[in-house]
Image 1 (cartoon, rainbow, N blue to C red):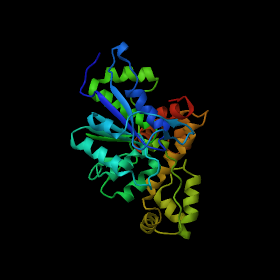
Image 2: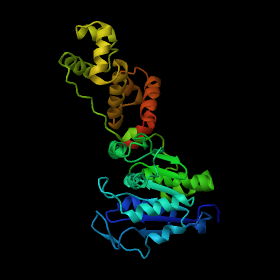
Image 3: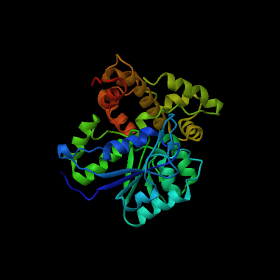
Image 4: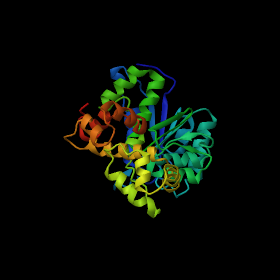
Length: 323
C-alpha cells in the first residue's frame, strides 16, 4: 500500500447537494483500492444540516456523521452548494475556517466555491467555479480572482474546481501530488477516465457573436461573420464601412470592445469549433472553411484560444479527430 500525508478525507454535504459532485469525491477517496496497492483513505460524508440530506434528483442521503467529523480531516471537500444566492449556514462556514486554520486542505467542486468565498478563504486568491457562475462569484466577492477558463486552481491549501467533471480532474490532481503520477494514472484507469484532461472550460462554452448597437457597423459585422473564410484585411473592411482605416478601428473597438483582428480570430475559432463538432470535416477542411488557411495555423490559434488542440476537441465532441 502506498503511504502519503493525506489519509483522512471528509466530504461535507448539505440539503440540495448534487449527487454527481458528491459522487466524484466518494469515487476517488471513498473506494478501497488497497488490494491493488493503491492508497486507502479514512473517508466519510458529513452532513452540514440534519440528515437525511435531500438531493435535487429525488432521493435522500443518510449519513451518521455531522460537522464534527471534519475536525480531524486532512482534506475537507465542499462538493457543491445548492444556491449561490443563499448564504451557507454559519456552522458550515466555521467548519471550513477551522480546517484551514489548523492546516488542512480545503477543496470545492463547482458551486462549492461560494461556500469557501463566504468563509473568506478565497480572498486574495485565484479560484475556479462553473463558468456559468463565475460572473456571480466575482461580483459577490470582489476580493476573489475568479478564473472562468481553467478546470481547477491549486492554491494550496485551498483548491477549487469548475463544474461537475472538473471535480474528477482536481481529485486526481491531489492524488498525483500526494502519491505520484503512476498512482493517479492507476486510479484513473480504475475509474475509466483520463488521468489528465487538456484544456480548460473555454472548450465547453458557446461564445455567441457580440451584439452591437452601432448601425454603421452592424452590416459590416454581419458581412464579416458570413465571410470568415476570406482574408478580410482592415482596409477592405473600413472601405465597406465607408470609413478610414483609423476611424474604423476606433469605432470597431468602441462597439465590440476589441480589435477587428481579435474579433475575427474569435469568430473563426468559434466557427472551427462548430465544424469540428460535425462529422465529415478533416482538420485541413476546417482550417480552410474557418479562414485559418492551414491546419498548422488553425492548431496554433485554436489551442491558444481554447486550451486544447483541434484533434482533442474533435475527439471529445464527436468521438474522432482527423488531423
